[in-house]
Image 1 (cartoon, rainbow, N blue to C red):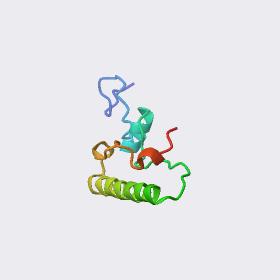
Image 2: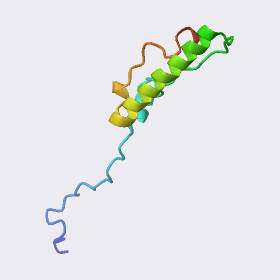
Image 3: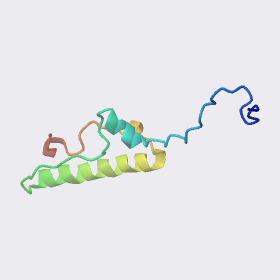
Length: 92
């Protein structure tokens, strides 16, 4: 038997493996048990002027957080506190 010209030393070469797909930041956070959302759950509330103002302010806070996420594509830069809807936030 002759020497294999592709592998002259007779040793098995490492097989190339396909590149590992990049895991998204959201998936990494999910695996680490961190939140991957920027919103809060809102519990049912009585439609008083005060509650509607709290809700509207919470919507503005979420819009600001979403703008940060869209601009930076980095969940770590999106603040999680304070809760956007304050006392109207449903904590799970």
